[in-house]
Length: 624
Image 1 (cartoon, rainbow, N blue to C red):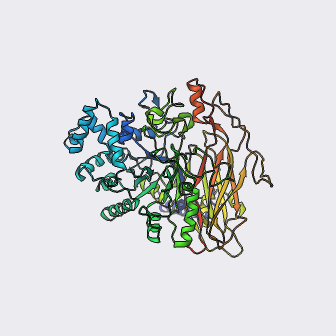
Image 2: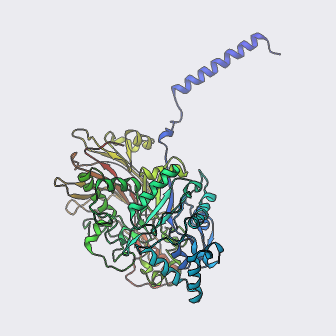
Image 3: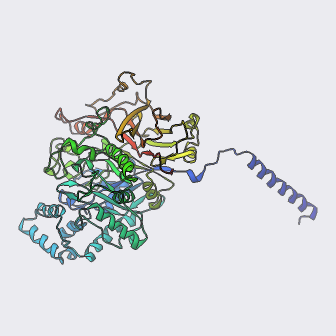
C-alpha cells in the first residue's frame, strides 16, 4: 500500500505533467491542424445512366441489366455486358444516379416477362397483343412509346397506383445499394420532354431516401412537356414531403434552340418570375456526355481553338429538323451563361446561372467515360468490329460520333446523399469529359500570390474568397478579382497541356463578350503576342498502337491569376478549362483491338478536358 507522502509526490508529478503537456501543446503544434469546417474532398460519379428499366434501353438490346446492375458496376463489380463480354471499371465511382425514363419506367421488362401487374392494365394488354401480332418485334412497342412522348395532348393511361408501385421498385434498388460514407446511390429519374422533336430532357435528382422520394409517382413528360409544369410538380413534392429535389437539363445541342431560349414554351418573353423559378430548380447543367460536348461551339466562339470538341450540330434529337446557325447560341453552355448575364441585367434575375457537370447518358447500364474502356450508348455501340461504321440503333447517328464522356466532380465534406446534393445545389462541382483531374478554383479580393503555394490552400480559399459556383460583388476601389487555380492530372491518365480562364462579361452597351486567358502552359511555351495563341503541344500519340507518352505536359498547375481587364461596373463570370495533352480517342483503341482500317474521316486523337463551374461577379449583388 502506498504511503500518503508517496501519493502526494505522484499527484504533484501528475499535475505537473498534464499542465506541462497542455502548455506545450498550446504553445506549438507539431502538425498544422486541419480546419474541418473547410475540409472537402472531390468525389466522382455519374448522374445520368439508364438501365433496362428505360423503354429505349430495353428495346435497343439491353434486356438483362437492371438498375441494381448499374449500381454494382459503378461500385467496381465485374459485369457481363449484353454483348457477352466481361466489363469492369478500372476505378470505381463514388456515386451514381440510375435515371431511367419516367415514361413507362420498368414496364417493358415486366411486359416481356408477362408480369400480371402489367398485363392487368389496359395498356399492358394492348401492348402484349401488339407484340404477339408482330411476332415479338419490340420495335412496335418503342414506336408506341415515342409517339406518346411527342404528343402534347396525350392523356395518362396508367393509374397513379400502378406508376407508384413500379417507381418504388426502381427506387428500391438505389436504397439497397446506398452506403453512406462509402458509396452514394441517388434516387431519381429522367423527364423526357421532346417538343416537336426538340430535346428538353431533364434528370430529376432527389436528396432524399426512397421512402420519401416515392410518396408521389415520377412526374413525366406524359403529364406535361413544359418544364414549368415539372418545376410545379417538384414544388408540390417538396411541400408534401419536406424533401429536396432539383432538375438537371442536358443536350441543349439537340434542342434546336429551345434549351436556353429567351421565351417560355408558350412563346412569351422570359420574365423575372420564370427566371427565379428556373434558377431555383435548375442549378446545374450537364454540359458533356455521350451525345456530344456542349461547352462551346466554333461558330459562336471563332477565336477559341478548342471550341470544336466532340461537336454534335446536325439536327434535333428526333432528327426531323436540320440545325440552323441562329439556333446555336441557345444551345451551348458558354453562350447560355452569357445570355444569363444579359437577362440578369434586364430582369434582376439570372435564369442561366448554372454550374456544370458531366455524365454519360449511357443506355447500356454501364457508366463508362474512358476512351480505353468505352461501352457506348446502346447495345450496337458496345465494343464490336462494326461500331465504327454502323448507326446507333440502326436509325440514329453514326456510332463513331459518340463521345466517351463524361463524369461529375463534386467537392463535398463526405460521400453521402445530403453532402453531395448540397454541393451540387451550391454549384461547387465541375465537368470532366472522362479524366479524373482534380481541379480547385477560388475567387476573391484578398488573395495574395503566395497563397497558391500554401499547404492550407482550401482553408485560405474558403476563408478569403468563394469556391467555384460562388458569387463576388462590391469590388474594392481600384482592385480586380483574384483567383487561386490548382489542377492535378488524373493519376492514371495523361499530363496537362494548359489551364485557361474563360471570362464572359457585358460591355458598356449591355452586349455579352468573351475572352480566353492562357493562365498556365506546359513545357515552357508562351502566348504569341501577335496571334494571342500559344503553340500547340507536341503530340506523342501513336494511332496504330493506340498509345501516347507523358514525356510532354505537366503533372499539375498552381496558378494565382488576377483579371487584368476588370471593370467593376460590368457583370462578369469566370470559369476554368483545363486541357490534357493529346491522347488516343476511343476509336483508335477500337481500331487496334479489332484490327480495323477505319474511314479517314473518323477522328483518332482527342484532348480531354475539365470545366469548372463559374464564379460570377455582380456589380450590384451580394457575396456568397
